[in-house]
Image 1 (spheres, rainbow, N blue to C red):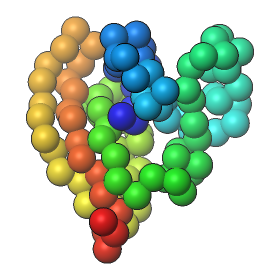
Image 2 (tube, one colour; image 1 turned 120 degrees about the horizontal axis):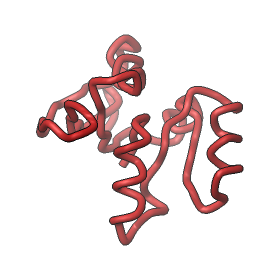
Image 3 (cartoon, one colour; image 1 turned 180 degrees about the horizontal axis):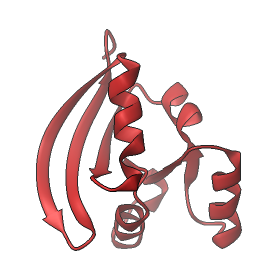
Image 4 (spheres, one colour; image 1 turned 120 degrees about the vertical axis):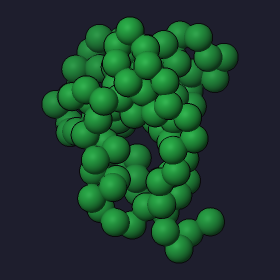
Amino acid sequence: FATSDAHSYFSLYFYSGEAKNIYMIVRGPKEYEKFKQFNQRLNPITADDFLKSNKQFIAVSASDRSKWFEDELRSNGTYNIKIESEWRADSGHKKLLTVRQAGGL
């Protein structure tokens, strides 16, 4: 799972038995360092690094200021994005996305 939404990340991280497979997507090194300083066990990764090593993944997108990762994927043009589910939560509108690199898997 990948998300740029902190609320979704912490919910997934703490309730999952596979926290090492939950990624907090951040914009750059400064944000990465903030997460690592907060807690060494968290799993932040820059968007560029994540996309270099993952051709297919599931993402949680939110309709607030953390939606930038979904917007970046859509504007890039090299990813096929399918909305699997949508729901409203206390923290806003959420979407579960399947993301595949075009021409990939």
